[in-house]
Length: 147
Image (tube, rainbow, N blue to C red):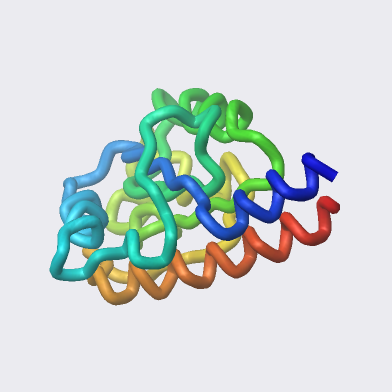
């Protein structure tokens, strides 16, 4: 009974963690712009947190390389189930302009499963918010399936 209440609460007020795999910071600036009063992504009930053990949704920007793929996988593994992952920007989706580089693994989906892809270089705040809302819907669906 109480566990069901907690799961439903997680779906109503998910906590989001942002991780930069090593980008040019273009997408990071746009993600932070989403948290400002101008775009106010928090109106959808989310809270930005810094601890993966508290996060329900993971926002990932930048190209995954051999140095940070273990960190990304570790962060993902620390998040409680169910969880959702949103890859932001061309670098997060495919590796972007760096995909041919010797140290680049590729997009986020080469290391962890991705639920939503947000295109752009850098991704616009409106596209990021749209991706977050889509990710929240997928997260709520995973919460219902877990019951």
